[in-house]
Length: 247
Image (cartoon, rainbow, N blue to C red; front, side, top):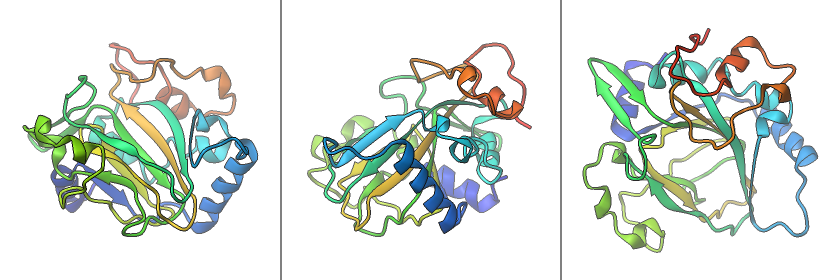
């Protein structure tokens, strides 16, 4: 459950960093697993991305409903949330980033944030598992804090979205290996050029309310013979019918 200060931070910023969820050993295990299952090829560029990392094994599957992180998502999305899709982003030093994007309902109704009577609710949300440090100036995740509530999204200059200019309202949160960054897709965010000494490795799991979906292809539960009942429920396709609550 979020503390009162964490509620304040999320409502203020549109994102929250949960510190030290994974140990250094767990981060190394996940990195070694990715090297074994998705080895780098000579034809790969500096920026790599692939989906379906939850199929890499129990170490990745169990991130889906990690007991330190899932309660935050339940409180921010609702008790009938679902996992919509997952993927990873790996960036070698010098890798170009991605344009700043997102924002409240700019393109579609999945990007929203709402507060009423002490309850926070979000559309599509992200839990980013950080496997190595992102120190000030290293790049990686950047955002415009508080932009999940902006009324002037069209006023963000093109050169800011393209990251040819970075004003002081665009920030790069400092992250450490083992942290989990959670944010709403209503937040204006992007990926800056990676300047860290190590390859940036981030595992992303995206969550939705029960009625909506962003992924074009839903999870196939047959791909997860060892999934727990809770994980199977989380991977259920979207439905207007009531989903079972998360345990």
